[in-house]
Image (cartoon, rainbow, N blue to C red; front, side, top):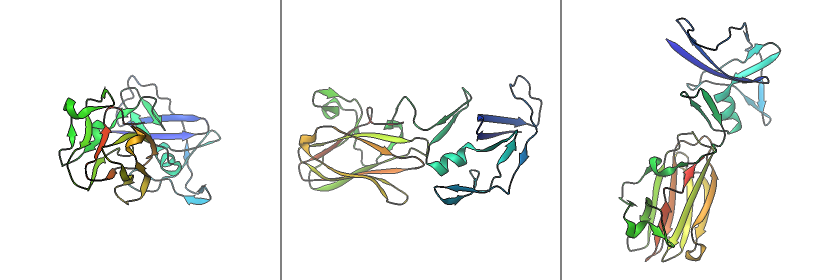
Length: 225
């Protein structure tokens, strides 16, 4: 049975992989370290208890004059996203250099996602895959995104077509806390929002549309990072 622990300390960042079998072909170096459950932590002046993904308390590790803490616990405390790439044995903290389009995380049950060229173009550019609401009547429109805590920021593009959008917001779907709130005028063109989403599992994107107006969001150029 194989277990993986990610720990960080003043001396650097490490991935420790242990198994019940032989460490064949690994680059691991065996060390002698100590757990120190007596050590206490403050984050921005408030008590902090490192925990694993199941909520169980974790003790820091003391080794060779340095203190080591679980990377995931630290990322949660400081509001920094974390991801582990097993293929490259890499721990990724914070923003990724390359953005990940929101298309794969998009969810809307009203059939407002389209790849029809008649609806995917805006100001002469074809965005190929968009959220587009072209129904008549004043109404609310929206869709869900599921970053699953993997990303630091959401870069979202949105435009009002035909009529201004008097209310636009992105909220945490679990708490309804608004992470970004604005209005979008037709004259604004395609607006770009950069929103801090570190630690959020799911998001709700909402627009209040006037009669004769539409809400346009390109899913290919809006992305997580």
